[in-house]
Length: 400
Ligand code: HEC
Ligand code: HEC
Ligand code: HEC
Ligand code: HEC
Ligand code: HEC
Ligand code: HEC
Image (cartoon, rainbow, N blue to C red):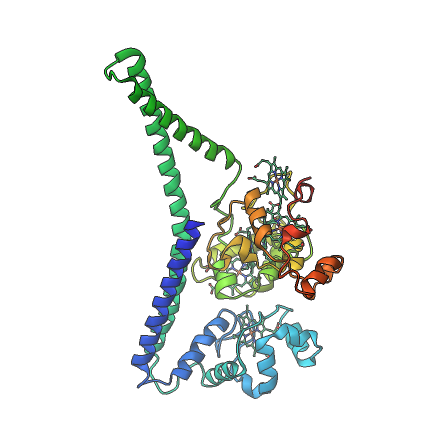
């Protein structure tokens, strides 16, 4: 976890640096440009993957002239959370949803004013008012360095791990060689007269070799930092990060079943029947989705996380009942081009969290059976109830 700490600091440092550079950029440009419109343009970045302004339909409809077609109050609600509006039975929202092949638009964490800003930006045809656009690309560059910084740190993590493996291997070899030399000298050449020197060398190298073997043996079958190549260059950074698609839009069984599940190609087609080209990989990778549909053959993803067969792990229990974020166990997936397993999935890892993690009793009907603990929580006898208190260390709960 030292690595994680260093990583966090690194990310933090990079974020602070980019924030500062954005700030300086804004300061310099403020005499020439209204910073409000700059922010609107930045906010519109998250819409660009699915919408154009006068460039035709993408995943979602062309937004040109949208403010003339729809009322502002409706637009604000729809842009903030279209699914909520649809579920509330709003007729217009349902109609737009149906016309667009029921591809849900992700929710956006924007204030009313920020949405108004975006609408003004759209109304101006996507131009930053009162200035040449020369300044704008720099601001997007700043946010892309933020992304690059995150990518760097994920790579760094894998690299550090590989480094420590390499170090371990060379220490092992050196120790074995030392051991052999001193044994040889002790028995055959007898160059060093003092016996105790041999004994010290032999004992230390034996301890170190033993330790290394123990560490290797216990991590046998574990695959922390495992990062296999996948049949399609699918990127979580592009989907969950840049396009802010909700994890459970694709892993839609995570809150109701034992398995989070990998989405079938039909889910990809919700969007890729329209999006035929990616910025990085062009048409090549997306074409594999169409091939899979045509040949009726599912894409054969390589499973990254694997627990041994004797362990029982349930996603719904953790995501739905435990109300944990995916990231607590899987790391910052939205910054990964390729998925990498960041935790070792050892028994110690499970228990460590159960020891410290409080159970979310509030408004959780699953826990009504624990009335006694509830009582204690209410009258202040306890400040929190951890997973261990409700039996999160009982062998049979995790083992078949
Ligand atoms: C992942 C793709 C995606 C992203 C990102 C996205 N949208 Fe959408 N948007 C859609 C889809 C699909 C629809 C069609 C409606 C539906 O299916 O719910 C839509 C519909 C809309 C509509 C209604 C259009 C109409 O004809 O009434 C507006 C307005 C809109 N989006 C604005 C935005 C804005 C503003 C953003 C950025 C803050 C944004 N969208 C981001 C996919 C997206
Ligand atoms: C909710 C919409 C949505 C879904 C679902 C979706 N994608 Fe995408 N995907 C996009 C968008 C938008 C882009 C374009 C990003 C860009 O601008 O490059 C994209 C880009 C891609 C790219 C190209 C990336 C690049 O930068 O070159 C690949 C490959 C891809 N998707 C694969 C998949 C696969 C496989 C699935 C199903 C598991 C899937 N997508 C599901 C919206 C979606
Ligand atoms: C557009 C669809 C899509 C979205 C959105 C998405 N994923 Fe995935 N996810 C996939 C696909 C496809 C795979 C299998 C390929 C791979 O491993 O990259 C996958 C694999 C994974 C894996 C590795 C599974 C294994 O094999 O062990 C994890 C963990 C994961 N996703 C977590 C997340 C999290 C967390 C989020 C939200 C931040 C998220 N996913 C969002 C489609 C998606
Ligand atoms: C408490 C930790 C924890 C949380 C929270 C968690 N996962 Fe997992 N996840 C795991 C473990 C452990 C595995 C390996 C399971 C196995 O091999 O049986 C796994 C496996 C997966 C897989 C591989 C396929 C599968 O179903 O086994 C995907 C995809 C995945 N997780 C996505 C998610 C998403 C998305 C979320 C959030 C909605 C999430 N996970 C939340 C621990 C967690
Ligand atoms: C990040 C924290 C975290 C990690 C890591 C974690 N858990 Fe949990 N676990 C929880 C929480 C919170 C609950 C309480 C929710 C509940 O009661 O179901 C829980 C509950 C459980 C339960 C039900 C306990 C009961 O008494 O009902 C089982 C079984 C379980 N976890 C297994 C595992 C296994 C196996 C692993 C490792 C592969 C694991 N957990 C890793 C947080 C975690
Ligand atoms: C919170 C979940 C959890 C609980 C509770 C739990 N285990 Fe485990 N156990 C695991 C996981 C996960 C592994 C797989 C570790 C690995 O592959 O490194 C494991 C592995 C093992 C192994 C195989 C040896 C090893 O380290 O790989 C044994 C033996 C074992 N557990 C015994 C027990 C006993 C006995 C108890 C009760 C005192 C217990 N476990 C309670 C999650 C749990």
